[in-house]
Length: 325
Ligand code: ES4
Ligand code: ZN
Image 1 (tube, rainbow, N blue to C red):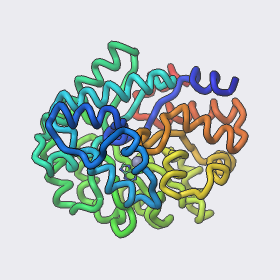
Image 2: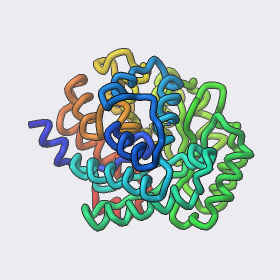
Image 3: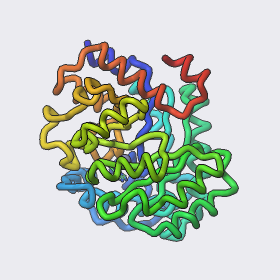
């Protein structure tokens, strides 16, 4: 019953790494198509390798998996598969992140990556009536200078990019490292998001707000350790893109029963539910809603609040948000 309610609930997905939607079956198909060797004998062996103790464990495997993505057609097929799967989960709007540096560092032209994604976005609209937006994420383990070079490279497509983001290894790479490039992105009319408080301390969430002036916080879990920060996030109506199954798989929470999603809502935080890297973390967005609904006893009112937050926290224009809530 709640299952049907969840799938039928129109929702936006705001925290999704398109490279993290690469299912093992597609990984094998693309490896064969491109003549790329992969260090696994079977789909089962790939899935067995997806046991992580922390963010870095996961990132090592995630970057290795992305090596099969070579051509515009690969990025197109990857994103079409995600949009089809998301549509089945009741997603009507998706703001998808991509990591251009993961690909340009391997010699894949920026144009191949983005043109493949853009053609998939057009197909999602045609097939499902789904709207979508692109968030270009900078890899925080690389330098700010490299992020600037990526922003430069994106210039011909800036009208098609909605926001910039900040992902990869959090601890040791605080938001302030990217202050200048985020200011430049803002100056070019882009919205701003950053992963903060996934493994990093509440101070990184504060920096994302004060130094980067982000429009959304990706994850934000560790904000809960700082009551004044929670109060501020609530007062400012800051959207948090929370990812329950990701939190479980990356050991941000020990058990799904310990997930703080209901505590976030109770403290007035504008939390949303998202899948992050669904091919790696064991579920798409409806699975994430179901997991916390079952583990934390969320009722329909709470689930509807989470879905409503996904639209109010989106980068859709106000009239489109109004039409969804
Ligand atoms: C990510 Cl869960 C997570 N955190 C940081 N960076 C990422 N890139 C892909 N998934
Ligand atoms: Zn993420």
